[in-house]
Length: 401
Image 1 (cartoon, one colour):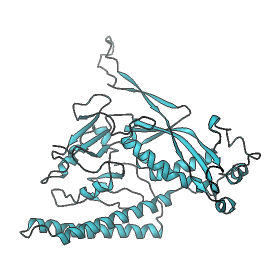
Image 2: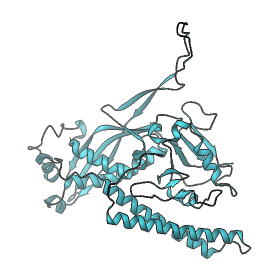
Image 3: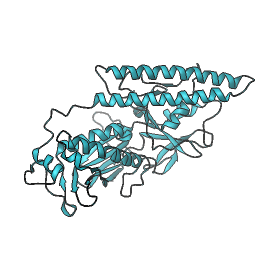
Image 4: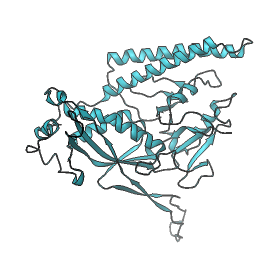
């Protein structure tokens, strides 16, 4: 259904993690089947069985997370042999001295803030690390720009055409309606602190240390903004746009379908709402479609079966692939809301065509050895923007009657 990361030869640890996850899923299916049998029998729900299902579900989540981590590490490009450091940049990080700085790698100071623009290799390293742990970034289109705002003209209504004979006149067709979408970038910062021991240790790769320190801060902040950001000094999340029922939405509005039950799924046919969601986008968007939800919602839909008694959620069948729901990949984004009354807890569609992430080129680093002595602070900033670029590509599931 969509492009998945391919791994040539899974490591031994990855194969063990895959086997553990598949085994955990088999235990989960058996325990959940026992729970369903108890509900259908006269004895009613058994709290011991329900607790067993929850424990196995948690173990399955843990196994899945471990497999994802190992897959990301195996797919990570080896940058150790690349020319990713200059003597000047390393000296700046360790001592703050700048006479030996390579001015081609460091494109100068950053104006009133001071500091320097990091080498392109370090910027690339940071971006790759963030992509590994930022779920929406990993499935969206990512553009780089040199300006504060990325502008993209799009056709709101689509161009029109008409049939005509070879020698017949060509009457003018209706002009398409063009909209200019603007994606401003906002400043995102992190301030990791290094001890004197780290700076004095020649064996410590300070570039890698800095990239790993800012990775989680940047990924957590942008991940939340890509889902629910209001667009004010941050990217605009796809859930922050005006919502309208599918078939009634206008350009600039996100479409949704409802579960028919406030704060939950239908008790009789819970999977029907997911089928409605899959067929809410146009056919062209379903080919690369995927579900986006948080782990709590995954735990809920994992228990659903189809009419043939088969579980509609399936674990990844090989390393580097995503788990699937009704045949479509599932991306876990912890910033998606939990299931609740009138919540939009599940999204489906082609996020590569639907959502745009904009990175302004240049990561800036200011070395501050004074504010937190004896620690040295590295005030690291980058500019990121984002928003929906195709409102037909993504639809949401609303948990409402």
